[in-house]
Length: 511
Ligand code: NAP
Image 1 (cartoon, rainbow, N blue to C red):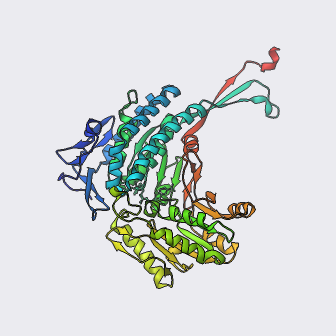
Image 2 (tube, rainbow, N blue to C red):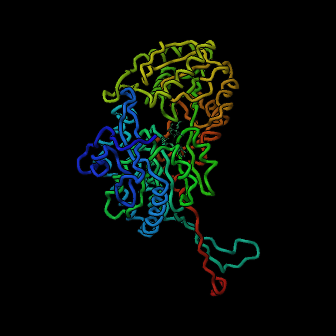
Image 3 (cartoon, rainbow, N blue to C red):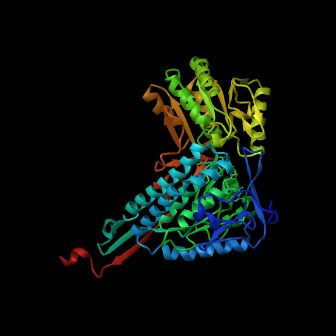
């Protein structure tokens, strides 16, 4: 894992704003603790790789120690006590200032996303800007919703008098551990940080190895806001395999918000008695009925299946086509798939390298298994290092791994079915239950099947999607615990506190 300080690639762009993050002597990025950018006492670095440049070294960053994790939690708790006493409207203004800084300084973040995770240029820019919008929305939403509480009188309970008034309001949980995945290291970090902060919490963030520097830059946008206490957003870096368990099991974590793959199953078992929010993998099905608008469905399948090379939790990961229209649908999907551009993220190619060689090998293994068991390739298999050309695999059956496993790459499998019961099998027998989508012109049929699909969300006549970011977003089964989206995350990152006023005599006795 770590290596000595022999350097990594790339000082940040963006001039003075981002320059404190980088140590030219070590050639590596620092971590953020108590408002300071520091080198780790470990003297060790972790390097990530550039997926689209043959996995050559990309950025170096700190392999933090357990003592530094302890210090991050302690500093966050101290900052939280201060932050929680700042009026809500002022907290909201400071978050809006962070959003504005992110908009102003988005270009270096987008550049880092291109290099660390091969995100196409346009999508990388969108991620940075959408994150700023998310922070702003969370600030406004929290300012309204957190101002409200309940006042409950005692006399509704049998035998009770009206001599107690209970005021119930929302208070922060304390320190929220935020662990985002590689595919949206900025957006899925702020989707945790912004609701946590507006609710009065502090955050300790563990960025993904691929995507670490983009996340560090995001943190600078919070750190630079005047009035935000030092230590409110702490960023501890290192490989999850080295420091993840220690951070999850740490008594300083009062809440855990995790997004990622099956790692999350282990994280949820290790979490102490704290609320956990888990957004994990998915195998989102797209069910296309015989009466569907096939052009609409084909466009959604190609967009949903291949955006960011299929590396999205809500990508279309299996198409379930009724026999009557399967040939016509697959022909349309194939035509559109062949038009996708393949290449470098800097050139804004639609299909870029997947995140690692291991991921590309895994994807290839799924496709080879399917072909060996009789699946039909509708596009030619082609791979150059991590770059996999978009791959449409027809005649997939339940015996094939591709039918059930999440490729997390540019591969769209198609199964053909004769009945609604058969279609539902590919949704409800999956270990995942994130989203699904249904294409039909019959709204009764759509609602009927949506009710029977064991998923957190069903999209009717549109591809699976997480956004807009204030919609509730949740998975069932191995796809997650709890519900998020801005509104629900604010709710989840608070708890109810009650203050009871005991009157000397029932209030109506004074009349
Ligand atoms: P991952 O391997 O599970 O990693 C997710 C995060 O967990 C990374 O920051 C990782 O750090 C960290 N981690 C690793 N080991 C840990 C440990 N022992 N304790 C605590 N944290 C640890 O997932 P990924 O490959 O980055 O992301 C892809 C997966 O995320 C896919 O399955 C996708 O479906 C899922 N995803 C789900 C959603 C959703 O909303 N449901 C959204 C996006 C992605 P390192 O990188 O340092 O290992």
